[in-house]
Length: 153
Image (tube, rainbow, N blue to C red; front, top):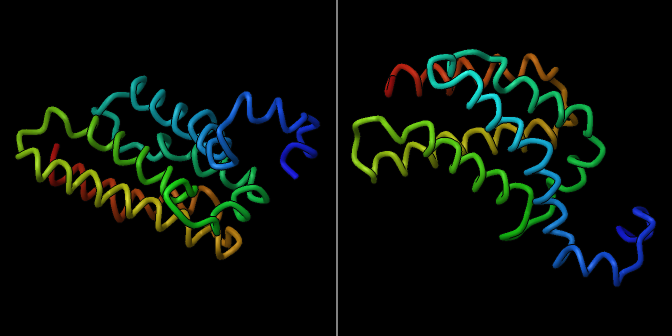
């Protein structure tokens, strides 16, 4: 079905990707994670407290909701949920790298904030994006970003 929708042969598909999960990962990295990393690099940790950093990400999920509502239900190690968790955890470790806390605390804090973000996105998608992207950003910002900033910066 993926090959048919993309108008490519199965041979071409498998020459480029290992499986459908790799396609999902590529879409997420190219359309969500790279933009998020770019915003963090551009604005830096000084501006970490600004909701605009996350707004583009939530807007992307909203704009492409038909796709993400379908793939959020895929389970397993290569699921959207797993991909987002890994990527957000990596970003959070980068944000916390210069904070003077133990490595174990950094890892747990990075995982905590990543898991919070992923579960919030998952609930939002499962509930058919009942909140606007802006409402999601402001909620996550209030619950998580302020907590991270207050505790570590």
